[in-house]
Amino acid sequence: MSNIKEITSKIKTDSFKMASLECKIRDKALKAISNSLIKNTNKILEANQLDLNAAISNNLAAPIIKRLKFDEHKMADVVTGINDLISLPDPLFNKLLERELDTDLKLFKVTCPIGVIGVIFESRPDALVQIATLCLKSGNCAILKGGSEAANTNKILYTIIHDAGVSAGIPEGFLTLIENRADINELLKCHETIDLLIPRGSNEFVQYIMENSKIPVMGHADGVCHVYVDKEADLSKAIPIITDAKTQYVAACNTVETLLVHSAVADKLLPDLKTALEDRKVTIKGCNRTNKIICCQIADEKDFETEYLDYIISIKIVDSLDEAIYHINKYGSHHTDSIITENADIAEKFMLLVDSAGVYQNCSTRFADGFRYGFGAEVGISTGKLHARGPVGLEGLVTYKYKLYGNGNIVSDYAEERKHFKFKDL
Image 1 (cartoon, helix red, strand yellow):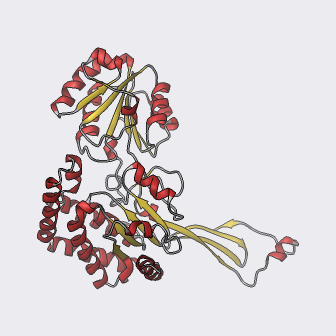
Image 2 (cartoon, rainbow, N blue to C red):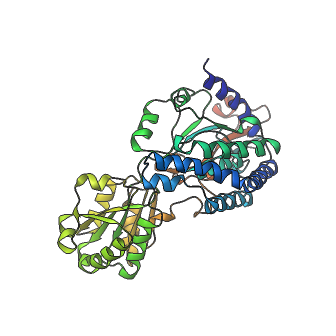
């Protein structure tokens, strides 16, 4: 038996202990983690500086370096996220259904943890804190594999969180850090001990995970998000929304990559938009119709399916709402897409027919975030349609079980009509 299989087997055992912990114990551990992170801020920043220095020496792309940075601002954000988690109600042991099947036969549907969750994430060290604390609050054990470019930061964060959690009464296996990339392939074989995988990375990487494991996978690959400016848009809202969606944090998966503009407003919008985007160092790639209005690079079909994660945006002029919806559903990644319009009926049609986890009106795609939804934080964004969709917070990290309480009941009595079901909701 491989070392990884031994490790995950022990974690599985601890997951049953985690599932029974009272909320006050989990919240106590979260508070201990928050305090310990604050106490060790200098150590964390020093470790992060080592990672940043290595990233710069290795000529990593600017968006990756931006994701990698863990400074006082990021520390404040993760601590706020933990405190928000503590204030949230317990996601476990909640009754979703109470039904009397018969006088002495009662059925309950009750929330419970998923169990053991493996999360493979990119170069954001703050993601480690979010994932670890969300899994703790929801009663799950987490196995984490972060990017090698954040190795020093991930290691110190893991050590601080793990030690604080265990000291507060949480089982040892509540959090495990896998540091060797080669161990990922072994992890994918642990379908008997890992209940869910959440990969956060490139499309190719996510597809690889899905194709090489029997473990259920939840997550998203590319974040090809759109903003569509409708013919009935208030253009005074459009430019701030678009520039925020593109430049507020360019390396995020909810950053807009393609702008669709109705031909009726293109002449009026695009010149001012070009000025605003170029002031923020954004390169514009546009269709031929766009290029006739503003001088820009010519976009090809590949551009419309590309997640740039950089100061680049593709623009296409369309002649109708239906054309915009078709483009989004064809080229998008079902992540988050926004329409700018003052027409409520058009907005509702857009929201109904765009097949994405998040559909917005008159606001930036950057709102697609667990913290901004009030979830405390998120383990990632799910673009699938089963179990969880959109930013995955506490509710996405629990499942449910059915509890049936009887008194010697047997099915034959009902099949042979000696007894009859009541099906009364309590």
